[in-house]
Amino acid sequence: MYIGDYLGRRDLYTPDKLAFVDAGKNPEWRLNFHQANLRANRLANWFKSVGIIRGDRVAILARDGYEHLDCFFACAKLGAVHTALNWRLSWREIHEIFQFVKPKILIYSTDFQSTVESVSSQFPLILMHLDWPGLPNSSHFETCVQASPGEPITCDEVEAEDTAALIFTGGTTGLPKAAQVSHRMIAWNTLNTVIHDVTHNDIFLNVFPMFHTGGMFVYTLPQVIFGGTTILIRQFDPQQVLTLLEREKVTIFGAVPTMYQMLTTASNWATADLSTLRFCTSGGAPLPVPLIEKYTAEKGIRFKQGFGMTEFGPGIFALAPEDAIRKAGSIGRPNFFVDARIVDDENQFLGPDQAGELVLKGPSYCSGYFSDPAASSSALDHRGFFHTGDIARYDEEGYFYIVDRKKDMFISGGENVHPAEIEKVLYQHPAVLMCAVIGLPDARWGEVGKACVVLKPGASASENELITFLQDRLARYKVPKSVTFLPALPISPAGKILKRELRAMFS
Image (tube, rainbow, N blue to C red; front, side, top):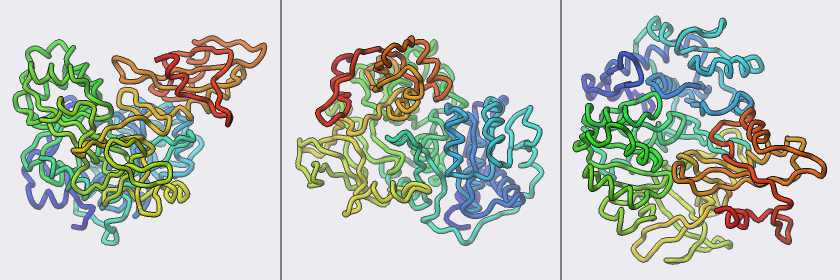
């Protein structure tokens, strides 16, 4: 058993302990660590039989389900690279990703069969379908798992710095980047997580997509390493979440503010018993104080808030429950093995209450971006600090606050949205002369996109036409909720569009 054989070690230590519940299945799957390890060995043996070796990428396109973990643990045993895809992406976006990631296998659910058919027609892949019917040249996932031998399988050459998974983060240029999550990164993030009160007996309900760092690495992998139980659902459903929190006696739960708000409007909110929760974690955006007060008063919930990034951790900052109201708006203090600083435009360290760029250093940083040495190199400065692109400050007590985003990215419903990617598509429309996409506050989603468009002389286009144009080419969560036509955009003397003026105009 080597560093990537996570379930092999758990099978040795606690084989009979409940490891996973997949509440998205009917009937539900309930697996102990021995059963989970057996499945991972079988899938790893099948992968090996079709030629998967150390370093090969194995992609999966499916809503949340235990098969994501089957794939991750099987890849880890072989030293292959788990590559989960955002199922909201269009087939063109996925094809673009495949051009540089070059996976050998694509595992998919039939919800996305038309996407897979389009991609696979232009890119050679071994296909596996999770449910019926699959494409004609596709193998059935569960049939392959059950038909394969279950003897232990590992790759002795795998090292701690080897990439275990690729997690995609949008780029400000509109091109996706794949952060390389190493086994070393996973281990250090787990240590940072344990320091923040995870125990051997915790039960965690995961509602984050498994293609997100939040779904796979915030609590799910630390839970495996620590021997706890993780519950999965297919997709977020407030009533189901409240039912599971009570029925399974969940002790740790994490979500984004939008989800916490939706839970309070579920039909079973008033009757749900959440007394087993030791704490809840909120991230992605500041948690409104009235919502904290509602959970505290009605359910006795203690909130921890935090801040993470795909490339770092993902656990970077944490705000203790006792500070949730006193330090409202803060992302907390750095986790134990994270060095956080604020720098000015000359990259000099700043003191308390001085706003500048947030930079980070520590052993839970990723191994750069896959197949992008230029981006990997430019992400770190000469001192080894990772530049986040976020404008932040810290107070005299060492609590950090995000002030603004140096980059134009905004967060909608917990999803990072990069305006440059949307603008790139808008410029493909024949009527668009100039455009700028901004994020505006929204009561439900935190922020939503607005496209500000200047049309070419003599050209015409409607709001609905442009939104439909974007929907055909982008994931739905990236598409702005509104389009405003302007005679001109505010331009700086240097010729740059002044998005801050646009935000002030519409917020």
